Length: 206
Image 1 (cartoon, one colour):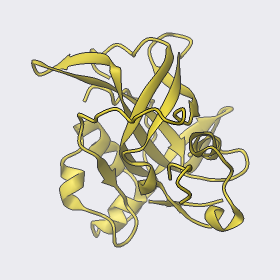
Image 2: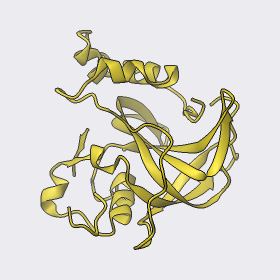
Image 3: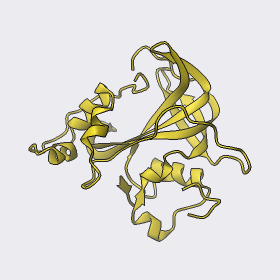
Image 4: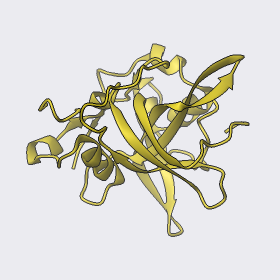
């Protein structure tokens, strides 16, 4: 996915700072979001990190927890995705990079995450991202790396089928998915926030 200049019974991981590795970049397509009482159509992307210091049990297996964050797929000046990526890589994007940065580049890259809970405590949010200190080895990764894109030439039915039912339902509502699968695109349906956790230069990480 190219960006240019956006539950279940699982408990959110505790607040704190963690070493984590990006294991999923999922293009959600254009979705309806509500801001200050008004609905907006925005292209969204879900990024997930594996947190080895927090273990969870799933289907009888102990595995590192995942934390996921939804972003507007934009590198505009005010975009949270741009701020987080620049802090992660340790420098600002150049003008050329802002014309089109492939989010697939962050897969498998380690970082530090600052995790804060929502006011009601229901969600763990990525409040800030920082580069891993120099010399610190990247942690081993348990989860497979997954990249899913709705861009022409990158869309994969096989990868889509491997996603959770919640993710598939949300992606399937997008006009980009309908266009890729030969359906008539229409306005995405409004969905409340969902908890998906149930389911260059050598010094620059990407």
